[in-house]
Length: 379
Image: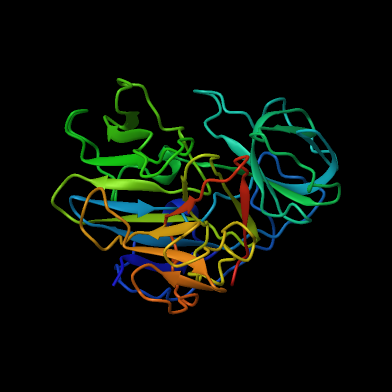
């Protein structure tokens, strides 16, 4: 049995702040998703007033956090969109939107103590559907994006986009429930370990460690600086480390991602490279159904003992810190296989359950290209 819990939805009458925890039930199977839809878009500062927008459904999800253990967590939801509209034009890394939106200058730019959110653009339709990039600045009707070396060649006028705030430590992991305030910086009750997403190689150590103390999130080695606004990546996971003897429950909630999404997988020219990734999905998907191989993001192996790319999966029900993979999968001879399980086709295995985080270990590749994992919803 694993410790991923069922997804539940919230009625339109229940605001975000009134969500209540329900009794935890442990199950391997995803139990149910029932959706609700608002008749119009939630009132937000950047909302275009000339159109009626239907929001994505919403829900909440419970994670069991075993005592004195690491739990690998990804948030299967997004925060509600602040704006949904249509692209008028694309030039370089700048997207202009249609209509008279009249945004304030740098309305979507993070500013410590003034604007606590970091926003990204998500492409809803068209050939570029599923990609997302952070916003670096904006004018009254245009958005400058941090492409990280990529380009917007697949994004064109007429496509729909959404502006969504990233989850942060403060918004996704408020004090309470599974998150405990530490008595001192040296006696940390709950820690959040962020994977090294820029590192090259395998079995990488965490890049940062955060803890909650005296009412705010802090970072190990950074003194008393408040870190509540630190961004949690949409397409990656984090590790919740409990350093106390009691089990806890973490509740996450938000908007259900209803569209195709893309996860970028990096490679290195001379060595294997681990990608700590996750799907923002509140429903389980099988290896075959995930599109990981079918989208061309995962390369087939030439033999069972000469594996090219590998998928490493972890067991959150195991009460342990610094966990090793519970299973390793690879693709060979037109099917998914599991290391140590012979040559059986395991493509129907529901590896991607809600809230899971995995490592995609990409083989060394000449030129170190980036691959795009295109994943579509199955609900």
